[in-house]
Length: 239
Image (cartoon, rainbow, N blue to C red; front, side):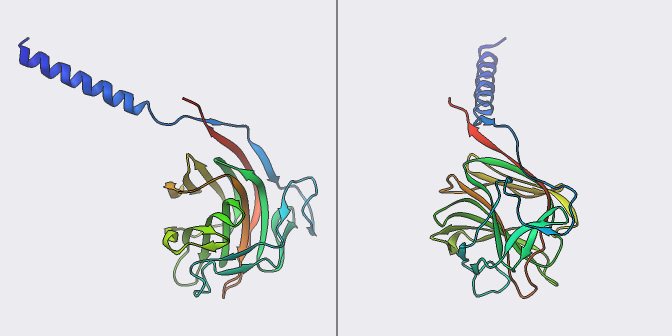
């Protein structure tokens, strides 16, 4: 083999080693055990949240979205309702704007659920929520313009206009699976087989509450019916 060919082979080998090292340098994460937040059971009528569930209605939550002039967006929100159990499913049972705290404080996490959110109106998720700071994901279904999903950062309970963005469009159909996660401060969201967000950066994300809620629109709030929810903690492994 000529010296030129030897040099080429050595260079290629070095590049392969570099690529292999880079591929193996992805952050590792440790995942905890799944914790059940809610699992539907046969039940008739409307009942309050079980005292043993760990779920709690938020009665004083207030938000101001950056798109407050548009009544279909998440705008001026003041809780006036509550979640409970309706025919065995976790649902909004009073008022039009309701919020239930699912987890009081967690950093990176994975959450899975079976939810029926097929209706007009608005609903939202708050993640990393603490002292009015965190991220909001909200969705509104319109009669003529589809079903857009939005992401926004909040500070002091007020949406930051520069962070507000539409991330996808997807209209919910019946009981579907939801998978929501934040890993290494990156958001991913999947409904059924549709990926609505994949590893979106969340600058400034920190540990906080996970909250599920509904908000009023000219078409009313979203009718949420949850069959099951579970979550687990995700931690980065030390180097």
